[in-house]
Length: 487
Image 1 (cartoon, rainbow, N blue to C red):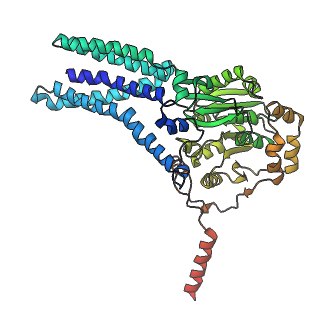
Image 2 (cartoon, helix red, strand yellow):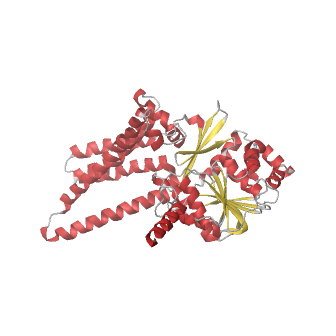
Image 3 (cartoon, rainbow, N blue to C red):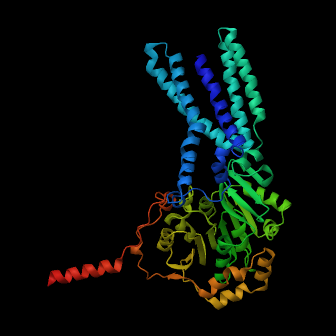
């Protein structure tokens, strides 16, 4: 039994020490420089960036990230967990007649404890104490097993080391870095460069770059957008607001930097915007940023009474609330990000279609050809503007002159000028050129055979795109074959 207590006491200590050492050394140790540089980057590793002729250093980084670090941070504590279970079995198996029953009870307790621990940590502890506070609490849990070890020790030789270890654990818990330092290091930055907030819904980190005059928005460790605004996030919000003849209600899934939500409010006719974000701390970090750095438009967004912020899952919100909108869309999200398939699937686009008012527009970023095909398979009327796609159940009346006149309305000009966005420079050429592709109900959608589904999000897992089926060529070949056979 003493061996079990020793291992149980050591598991949280080893876990916390490994992570603390990484945080304390990653910005100082020369051989960790590639890792430090990567942690500070906006883009994650991808197949395109990893497997090419110039990516040999990146392949070494891949091994460090996905082999070496997991073995050190997770593998060692996991091995100790397995060893402790064997020692526990040895301690309780003293009666051969009760062997099977005791094995069953221990297995049940092990599974139930794992489930309960995951739920308590994910639902309660991270929400109450954050990551660093939870790490401190986990380290202090080792005191329980050290106390049991001291109590059951058969001699003072066991009790005294247990008490010394307990003092060391208290020192370790006190020495853990603050949440700001912890997350700054793991984002390749110094503590004075970041604003961070977290709870059970996720982590928001804003990393300020004074030299570049911008702030990078990270959500759960990934760079998602930046301030000041202007780019695809702005286009996603502003373009459908200008194409729709008279939008009044808008829903945007994803807050991020606030770019898309702000841009979606650029028409005087819009009276209500639902901003739906799953990571609630994002609004806190944006509010704190607004108090320290003046970014055009951010104060206006945070004070816009038309905007109602909801912190929940976007798909669940649309299903539960059953509201109808003139425009509904999601902020741009990498198609390969974890769970991004939920915002690029046939089922998701069908949910958007069902949430539209008559004549309403569903909008999505279209980073891949498969996303375009998936979107077109759901909507009978589709306009494609580069990598922005709009769909509707009814014909979309696109008039470049009318859209340009909306860009020039006094409300829109003043609104975007106040947000530091040159709307004509951003949308002018796109509006004048019009859609790059138009899909109508007569488009043969049977050729769209490679789509994203909820249960098979191909883009999320980097599955190669198969293209569209050549329906016309196949029909011609079949007809030619039939005639040849009849002759």
